[in-house]
Amino acid sequence: MPEIKIKDIIKEFWKYAKPYKWFLLIFFVVIIANSIIAVVTPLFYKDLFNTVATNSVASDDVVASLIKIVIIILFLNGGSWLLFRLGGTIDAYTSTRIRAEMDEGVFERLQYHSYKFFTDNFAGSLMRRVKRFSQAYDTLSMVIFWNLLSLVVVITGFLLVLFNRNIWLGAVMFVAMIAIVAANVLFSIWKLKYDEDRAQKDTKASGVLVDSITNNANVKLFSGRIHEQKLFTTVREELAKAELISWLLAEGSFTIQALFMVLVEFSVMYVAIIFWQKGILTVGDFALIQAYLIGLFQRLWNIGRGMRKIYEAFADAKETVEILHQPYGVKDKPIAKRIKVNKGKIDFVKVDFNYNKTRKTLENFNININPGERVALVGPSGAGKSTAVKLLLRFHDVDAGKILIDGQNIADVTQDSLRESIGFVPQDPILFHRSLMENIRYGNRKASDKQVMEAAKLAHCHEFIQGLPEGYKTFVGERGIKLSGGERQRVAIARAILKNAPILILDEATSSLDSESEAMIQDALKTLMKNKTVIVIAHRLSTIMQMDRILVMQDGEVVDQGTHADLLDRRGLYKKLWSIQAGSFT
Ligand SMILES: Nc1ncnc2c1ncn2[C@@H]1O[C@H](COP(=O)(O)OP(=O)(O)OP(=O)(O)O)[C@@H](O)[C@H]1O
Ligand SMILES: [Mg+2]
Image (cartoon, rainbow, N blue to C red; front, side):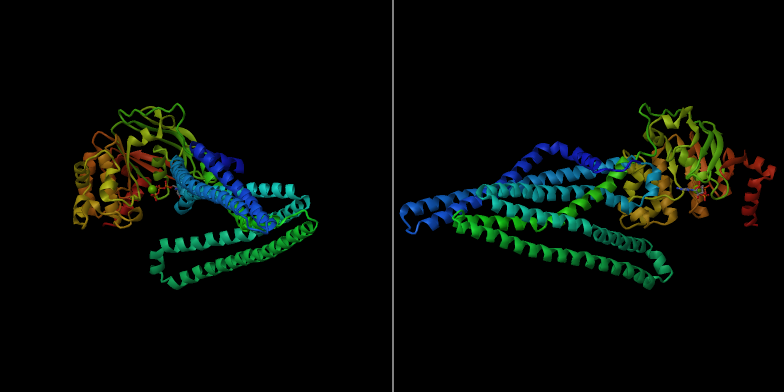
């Protein structure tokens, strides 16, 4: 993947900011106007002081012209006050809109990423990346508009005025400003490594915290409380050390900067006195210079911090843009059409697939399932059974070969239409932290409450849901943690029943159920399987005996197939698996 450059980041920002370009332009003009007022106002103070100094007698005329000046200053300050409020309001509106659209846009683009992408990235880290993009925009727009833009205009204005007044005065001010800005920028660049170190230790401490919290059951189970406390304390203390260094360096830089400013004040005033002695500068000029110095110092004080914020914002945004620019693992072809499933014939033709370069998970994998046929996939753990059905769902693309449904290559149809045609109960179903009603309805979001409950009855989850104090309104906890394994499986089955797709895949769908519940559900499943093509993966051979055909998998290949009776006769792997299970009963 090509390296993400500043240009790419700005392009991404602009994509979302562009609809608000007129607001941003007004904001831009407001800030500039405001900065110009900051340059102009001291000029009137200068007039005010000059008028006072040159008129020892307070005649009515003099007082009138003084009052006139003060009124002009009043209008300038009033204008500035209005502009500030206007700028603040525009900023509030555009920033909240742009940030919302960024979050929504990034979320939308994230969803197109493949199943693999989500298994490769931690949920917490993805969430941070989504949020940090808009936060980075916020920081950048704040620092650039409010601080840098205003600083540039004000410095230019001050210098123009001072050079105009006296070239030496301008020159001293110019050199002083260059020195302060350069020192600040150089220092913040030098300090970056300490800031990065602090950020890294912060991430590490958060990592330990999150890992420990999610593993709280393990911590309890293995009495690891003190161990965890030590782990966290170690990383937190490291963070504290890094924070202290970073903070003290900032303090150091402020100390030096303050000293710098005292020297600048002295030099400028020294030069001013000399020119006053020569009759070039007036009392008013002193007022002007002093006002400029104060305005300048105020704006320069945080320039170092501003630079660092800009750098951090770009670093954060880069992480997000990286995932935005990462090509989608599984893509719809531009000409992809909706799949048409009539009969539900499934063919895997010479399929090769591996998760990573080193080892083949499926090799030359061939199966043909007839319309309406019910087949079972059996085989040792790790044989590739779940992988095969994930390929059929196109969670991953095959490396070689093809998978056909009713003669249509699944790589040529839209992913949405493909997955709409398949009901899937996964090995380890995960639920949303939403109500049970919403979780089941996910199978068919148009279903009525009544239809949801009917499906729940068939899947035998209605009973336990009724027993919950909040019934179908019960929230199930993160990933469905508040339900037992068997309950979660039954909810997943209800969801598949509601979906009622022409192809049905059950991956160990009843493995967590006791024999009695399983027997009850088998009835429901039998009804569900009617007129569908069905793939059932199961270890419990009692559940697969009734299938039309059994495919035996080993090391990513189909090694045998036939009916239960055929396979027993052949005394192969199936016979061995069966004997072990049967043996444990006798
Ligand atoms: N996301 C993944 N990334 C890398 N390797 C994986 C991934 N998922 C599965 N594997 C590996 O692929 C192989 C096949 O896994 P698969 O889940 O298909 O086995 P299975 O036949 O369903 O086993 P079980 O009966 O235990 O569910 C295993 O060796 C497994 O470690
Ligand atoms: Mg599996």
